[in-house]
Amino acid sequence: MTEKYDLIIQGGTCITPSGVTITDVGVRDGRIVALGDLGRAAGADYFDARGLHVLPGVIDTQVHFREPGLEHKENLETGTAAAALGGVTGVFDMPNTKPLIADTETFTEKWRNARGRLWCDAAFFVGATAGNVNELAELERLEGCAGVKIFMGSSTGDLLVDDDAVLGRILAQGSRRCSVHAEDEPRLRERKRIAEEAADPAVHPEWRDVETAVRAVKRLLKLSHASRRRVHVLHVTSAEEMALLRTREDTVTVEVTPQHLTLAAPEAYERLGTLAQQNPPIRDVRHRDALWAAVRDGLVDCLGSDHAPHTKEEKDKPYPASPSGMPGVQTLVPIMLDHLHAGRLSLERLVDLTSAGPARIFGIAGKGRTAPGYDADFTIVDLRAKRTISNRWIVSRCGWTPFDGMKVTGWPVATVVRGAVVARDGQLIGQAQGAPIRFLETA
Image 1 (tube, rainbow, N blue to C red):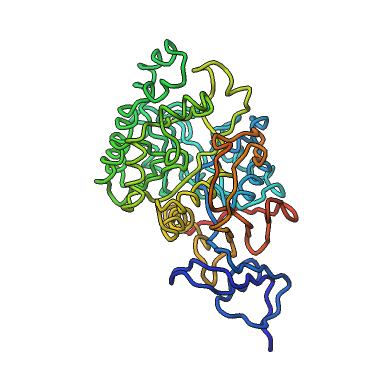
Image 2: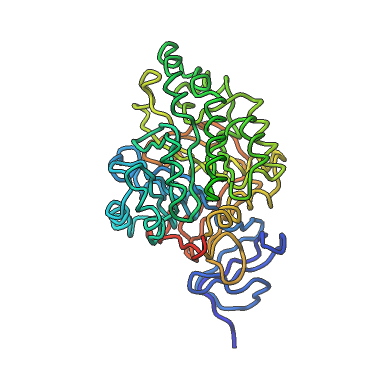
């Protein structure tokens, strides 16, 4: 009897837990059920992947899709469309919206509005505040919850927890890994005059200096040790932070972003002005080199885009009234494929940073590997394709990218989410059918 599949991906170079191999992949009911030469097996749909690489679906664990309340910048539909067209199959969305996602009512309402509008799978963070400490253990167990997000330093939105006593109480509640924006708020306030007096985005890394980040990371490591709570340090930007994190305990994991691995001061600010402004800031080449060293030696656990769109009109405001943040979910894969082409990391390391790593860190169920029983999520890429990233390609509502005009080698060809091809050759396909990401009970 001939085996039947819903989808057969034929002849692609697949990255599996056993290594890199040219093989067919059989998909049934949204999951991988077979790897190998499927020969004359029947399939409802076929994807010819010969000459292409079939990666486990890329998971971006830090995006800001701005819904609810800030939809003029982005919404869940446009944000996940950008993700899918960029080769991303799953996202974790942040809670600094209006209203904040910080209780059961706002979290449930966000999911109610998301149904039928997501082009990839998703999970939503809940924000930690001084007022919801006692609810966090319950909130983090809601279906589709990515965990708890903590802002130690002020950024976009109103979530801020800068008191160590409150931080300690938050870390004592619940068990899921907390994702933390680590900047020292007292030092930010003390030094804001630097930005106000200069009125030039080039001083952004001076205002939000390395010491601001180091102080926060030191505090976080101490609190994590005391509580034994697992924490994830988001968008690490400096050599000094990485030096601290080399002595981390096994409860601590580390993220870097493609933009911090790619851009550098002062050139980025000279060329892009406020478009280069984000928190924590783009720093100089010494720090960028330290981030790459941490990627190469295994200190970095995953990549996140920190996709944080603002309209061009908002970014054109005079600094420091201009908001911090830049889009990145659609460019994460091509930017990192170009770094792969340049020899800065291996394909296996890239897969670990974007698929297996996120699944391991956050306890994602059924994703992050090309193996039987796992969700049929694939980022199918052409490693030889030469393209130019442009604002015209960006489908994020903000309509721009700091990488406009950048020539890259390596490009996402198709995105498959639980067996459905949702994007191919720059076009969305079918209907938005993204679902809540599932998590292991022990996560």
